[in-house]
Amino acid sequence: MSERVVIALDAMGGDRAPDMVVAGAALARERMPHVQFLMCGDEDSLRPLLAKQPALAAVTTIRHTKELIGSNDKPSTAIKSGRNSSMRLAIDAVFEGEASCVVSAGNTGALMAIAKYVLKTLPGIDRPAIATFFPTLRGECCMLDLGANVQCDANNLVQFAVMGEVFARTVLGFEQPTIGLLNIGVEDLKGNEEVREAAAILRDSDLPIAFKGFVEGDDIGAGTVDVVVTDGFTGNVALKTAEGTINFYTKMLKQAFASSWISRLGYLLSRGAINNLRNKMDPRRYNGAMLLGLNGIVVKSHGGTDAVGFANAIGVAADMVVHGFQDKIRDDFERLKGMDEPDRSAAVV
Image 1 (cartoon, helix red, strand yellow):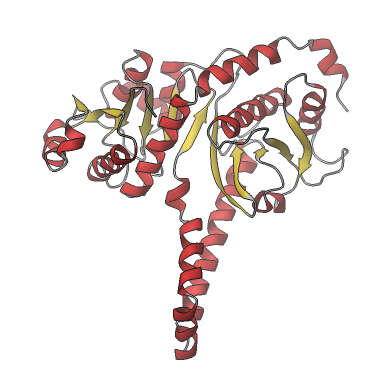
Image 2: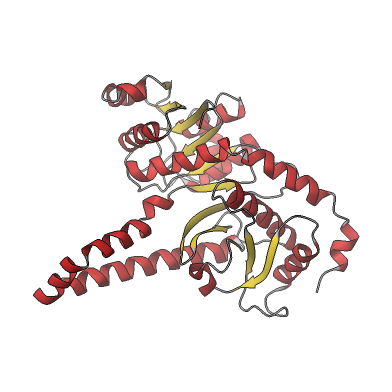
């Protein structure tokens, strides 16, 4: 990374803010020496923390505010009453061109609402989507939407496919990412009308997209495709189910190894392999959900993460800036806009 990247941070967002935010920014700074920060939050709280991180302090500007958005604040309330909140000031910095992107571990609904209100969506995109990536048997997979849009029509799903493909190509490094629509079966006649119509549009699209058709729930972890597209309701349920399953097996594994002295010995003998598995499945490695489709780069960190997880969210945002994610999104949607509308509707199965 050689170009200067200024990242706006909601320094008061998250369960352990601002300590976690400052510590995470310090880790990110070590990995990415060309990144600079604009921290929005309480200066009286931030100054002592930055004093302990002189290298970080040298590349950080503080924008003072004592106001913050709580985890239980409604999105509508956050828009109306949070104009001087740390979250709003960080998003405003992107809108004004002072920062290239924003990272927040604060209230997800408020972040989406304020970001959409301030930044607006990119041309050709009706709704932004929440996307993230996680491990599979083949490497990594991007999935969207994860909760921003409970109900979606066919065009929304097509837009999500384009956004997910660009993210997988520019940030995850896939040369030609494969895309699948999450469905209750792989047959053409399976699924609701919106899913089948979206599939027809993607099959007939002139976009350079490797659309593989329908995929099922077990294909997500298998890595059958690089990008899984679905509506926000289904995506959120699938994500939380996967997280719960991982937590379940982790706890069961711990109980199994602690059940007897022979099991504990087995753990010692296999500790290296178990540590490798733990590192691969560490949720902090995949921390950072992207709010795709906005006229600006916004990354949502998990509210309960630590410094390592927050640093990884900062890394995701920086990668999106450096790899020109926004420009590539605009280019692909210009092509999509040029498609003949009558032909698209005629292609519906």
